[in-house]
Image (cartoon, rainbow, N blue to C red):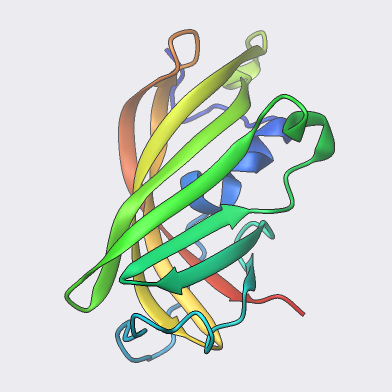
Length: 165
């Protein structure tokens, strides 16, 4: 069992923006998510996480928001790594799940490094959608059994995405 003292390896970056988002979110006052069902034209197609620098292709249409990480490192993309998210409009936010397949490398408190390719899921909520900013929060693991690819304890982490330039 791995505790909070674990250290993520380079290949874990595939998970970063959605699943292991850092908690450096400073929310600016904004309007609730009000993207219409046809908002895919009004919103930029490519977004960058201010938190992790992961890049996402975002599509919104028919009451569904889809995001897929597009800057997966080539060496892990060849192994099939991905981060894909789908959320549906629920009141003033978008609620959904992120599907992740990545090589997770952990080194708990100076102990030997452990790695495993894991399929993981996380709940996600998009709270604000404007053409300049997407904010939300996602579940992130606090404890994990890397050998079984099981998350033992989770917490919610905030994230901010801005349009790619």
